[in-house]
Length: 337
Ligand code: CP3
Image (spheres, rainbow, N blue to C red):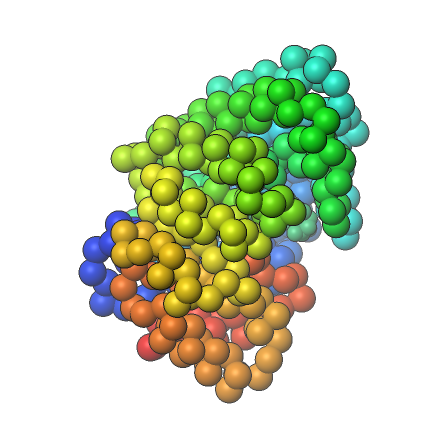
């Protein structure tokens, strides 16, 4: 088994830098689009374990990455709690009902993992089909990021409705964040029981909060999740645009901290110390450049991070219009260094 990524996460010695890419499962691969075309829509796709498992493995076969990530979405948790969503073509997620008052929170239930049997089944099939070639990453959204969608009902530039809720109803905000956190812990534990070898928590909207609010309304809950799954499998925390939080994230029981491309590898290593692995952080837009630029950037990135306690990745997910041949070239560059 290629367990480079697990060893890197645990701080063990590796013979080369492991690489995978956020949002590698889907969008850029013609093979993904072919499977996607057979589904009624995104949610039907996510809920069909055989299809989800198939596209989970595609990037391992086609791009040669050192890990697979289960094909699903962070929004399966709000749905399991009682807040269904739709994925609107070329627009993104949309919730018909949102959380506005205390009753809306009381109406939601703590997910126990059983509601998400379809993800667990997809993990089991993917594990079997991967046959130990590379580890499988399970994931969830950070409670704050899920909270933001549940209040806003869709994506937003500012997430001002969600932030307004923090300022105007802090106690209710904590009530909802706690329910999301307990659901996420149950869900991650179920993913590990189904076969996930590693976990990542995506805090995509970390960067809209200031440091104090981040600690109170986001990191507190991420930390609870890390405590709850500590010792099961390695955990990565990726908080996009949260420079101010790197030092405090390093105090949680995570193994790996994901960085976006605006964060300096040297500065973050100095802040974090030697006991955590770093992951990241190429700009996904760099993959639009010529191969000579991609190669030079891959080299620079590895020089900056060093080869140990490091997992090569992008600083955020792949964009859908990226040429998969360039993505493969980037992966090959890293594997060749
Ligand atoms: O990383 C992977 O390849 C695994 C699968 C995965 C998806 N979503 C599939 C997906 C993962 C890890 C996610 C996480 C996710 N989903 C996040 C956190 C990471 C990040 O990008 O910040 C967020 C914020 C979401 C919510 C979400 N899902 C949005 C905003 C959208 C629409 C815009 C977009 O990115 O396409 C989605 C849809 C989605 N999730 C697609 C895929 C492959 C595109 C759907 C399609 O096939 O058309």
